[in-house]
Image 1 (tube, rainbow, N blue to C red):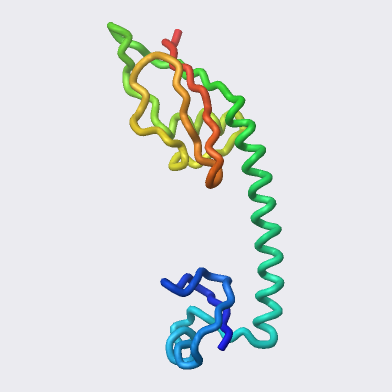
Image 2: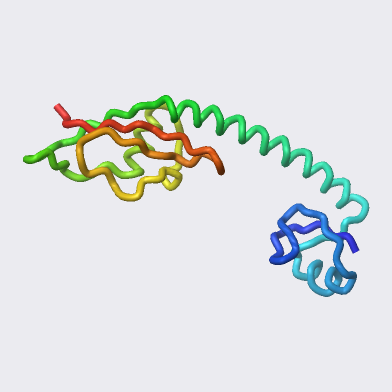
Length: 148
């Protein structure tokens, strides 16, 4: 029996895929659990339409990510911070600070996508990778300098 998965099923497939499974598996497990629907009539046509629209959406997201990656890669952020004796910073620069600074430049980035192992606690120039899309991680240049 052919079914269209509505949720990811371990060892079978991901949501949106069409699979051929045993009749008993489909009628006794997949369909009652709500993880699949029979691939017949309207469901099959809707599935074909869904594949086309999902591909368009994926293409659009990739184009937007490439534009964002280009903007991020060409950006240099200058962060002015208070410095104490011996060049030590009061506080540190975190992923949230970097996300806020990028936001002020019109580049919206989720702070969880900024690959910063630990906060920046010293003066200098740093390269920080930002995960935009899988396989696309441009680096933003951050210059930490004394304020004033």
